[in-house]
Image (cartoon, rainbow, N blue to C red):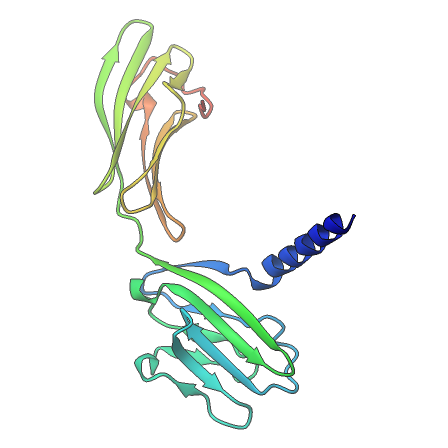
Length: 223
């Protein structure tokens, strides 16, 4: 019984730790700004200090009520701090700005707010190319390639006189840059999509441009 009690207490404390100390993931496109808010910022009385850090080593902002915020020299002109709600805006983010941003608010207790910020480039353009077309009286097969600057996917579209389907269903892979590349069929559209958490681009070809006997009545095909 005692062991069960200890286990349950451990589980409760673990859940509380996850709820109160988990980092919030934030994805930002390179060159854009990010606004990071402090949790419970509406409770502003009895504040001793507020410190924003990057990766627990670089102090970006140090603030005490009644004094001007102190900005780390490397971030002068790149950060804005609100003395009203303690939020931090970081401007023109670059890959080197990725990391864990921590707001440490000290009053009678110490409260932490953490964001895991990832700065990403916009994805590169994508190109959908029809490599080959094979026709007969009652069928039409297309071989297509979905290309980016660092990856590609091949797929085959099979059409009869009424419908089209994608061999193997939707095709996808993760590119060397960490983005997602997909090629799939929706109605009479072959869609090539390249995306990450901050941007996306696509290219489309119509089956009816290559398979004239097909009337375009298809649905998205999946495995």
